[in-house]
Image 1 (cartoon, rainbow over the protein chains, first blue to last red):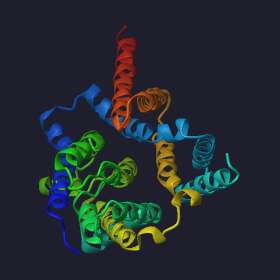
Image 2: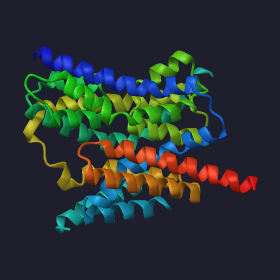
Image 3: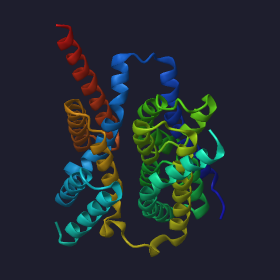
Image 4: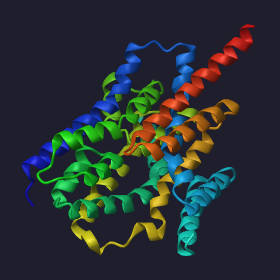
Length: 100
Length: 235
């Protein structure tokens, strides 16, 4: 149960790089004034980032994933989050089981 | 804020993150199992989850892992995968009026996609407090670290999460959240630009550039549609 020095160094490099990205935004907004249009841009970040993360899965992975994403999105209009997510997971697992 | 209200907020955060904890444990187990196949001990896998606490970059690191490990390679990859955090922290930073200056930086060190998304969502309906944020972070962080260690120790005994559909839990959560951020046509433009740019980039450029490309495209779409509206009002 030892820790290899090269592995430790690699982990520390990853941790430092990640901390930099986490604190970077906070430092940025301290030095940039937030007027109307910049505020508008910042408010668009949540949907823009979430969509960028999810789009390749939803649209370019396979039919099972695309259908399950549509099921989840449709469920989210009416049902609570946990139920919608569970429906999505069950859909993707059953579609894959049928070889879609 | 008195102790009781703080406890209520902490518990509220825990309730909000609960479904994501059910989703993160299998992912953490898989991370640990993959790390074990790359020659990492459970201690090393646990150390990485503790200090990095960013699943996407940890999986990418395992993908490009060498012996001995290259700190330049995995460090740069982590920077690239996690550059979206800059946008996320800039956005969430504007919602942290209830935090002290030091609390803000400390809290931001625990920024992860799921925690960030839940915090942004909370900030839309109520004031985001440090106690509520801590309620998100504490159980999620523990679940990620412990499941990673368990995965590395159990290794190949684990089943395939793809068959169970568990790999789909995170995209599903993100889709539910995207639906919640809908505010009309302008959001449509942001989502369309972001989705199109992400899919195109993922198709043509190897690696994880697609997240940054999609985020920036969505941002540009918001600025363009915002300024066009400004011109309409002026003319």
